[in-house]
Image (cartoon, rainbow, N blue to C red):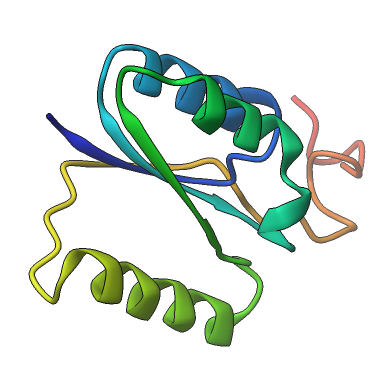
Length: 109
């Protein structure tokens, strides 16, 4: 069974990835930015699954400390030689202003 890590899984596309991966029987480590106890949609996926397994961990991609803690938690759970087959990074940082919201007419084609 492949082991997937889905970063940014609390809602939207990330949540849907988790649902489909667990439904097909894969092992998933799903991350949320904040308190994992508040990730009710993810807990519903875990509670309803009779196929694959899913574990929730916290990982805020804006925080080096949180990323390091996530890596350590993953190693503590699965051992120092954790095998991860696939990673979906569905979390990001968008800073304003940026080209997608502001583009001077001189740059437009």
